[in-house]
Length: 80
Image 1 (tube, rainbow, N blue to C red):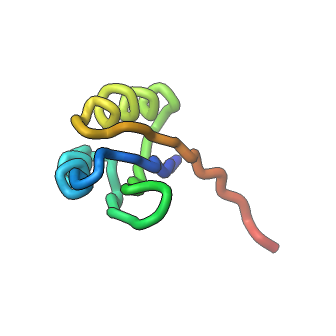
Image 2: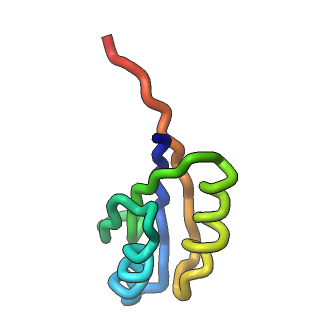
């Protein structure tokens, strides 16, 4: 099943509130508050790119206090 990482910036002080909201999304495998350029990293699974678009636009970006997201779609391959 395809995976993506969503990197999130939110308003300062609201990281825990945003993370709690994200954890209610059924396709979110992990949700971690981090230090650095981004505030939260979310690992999600999806079936189609349409589903991924829906999750990002209608579920994640609708959460109050989120300012910016960046999506990284995983491309898996074998290392030899």
